[in-house]
Length: 328
Image 1 (spheres, rainbow, N blue to C red):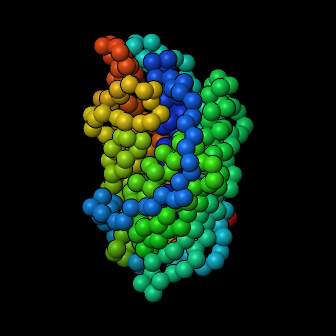
Image 2 (cartoon, rainbow, N blue to C red):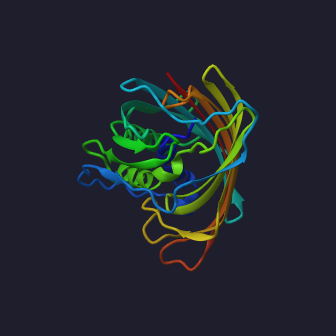
């Protein structure tokens, strides 16, 4: 019934891997900088960037208000699988399509409390992460870096509050002992984006065929992205809802800052657009959907300038992504 905050960390990680896998002009050979682990990262309180929900069609009768009310103390285990292909061209030269290794992340969630007003308190923790199956055509060093980045997410946990429509209301992320600088940055970005990662339900009563639009913006590894997701209640029977979703993302030209870039590198976004479609099946008495699938394709163009050089390189990227979540 909603997107999970865990999608954030995955998107952030994939953005980092994209830089690692791009041509020499952007290859980040800088070793990891290990610092003292932070005790936690506080999630932001709601602000003006809260997602906006607009009902487009209430659907047919009978209608009812969709409100989340998951069972307390029931632990849910969710497996998230990501497949991604990427094609990059730099300075007019195209590289072969990079078939990035399939990544699999497993996390647990548990609702600990439901307030009288319907607010949901829940905990989550990453319990496993690795690459699996076909490792693609990436170089062994890049595969090892990707595997290390995934495994470093194991042990990240936190506790959060959202209302019964799915709006984020605050929380805290706890880092594992020995977390390196990359993990800290990833988690900080995740905490910044928590408000935009939920897919809130409409306030109005709806029935089969209902459509609503969720508009939001988020900061993705230094890039401000605007997203519009349109949901359709395809079926509603015996407490099980099936939603179709279409997604559009756009980003205006902007400068990008990221600790993953080599020192002195300037990166400017010229254009970014993304389209996707998916399906979500779940119940209002569960925190996570039974199954969620989404396919997204994106195109971006950036210019890069390295330290001490007056030359600018143009980098064009095409990416296709398929993501599946399954919970039990």
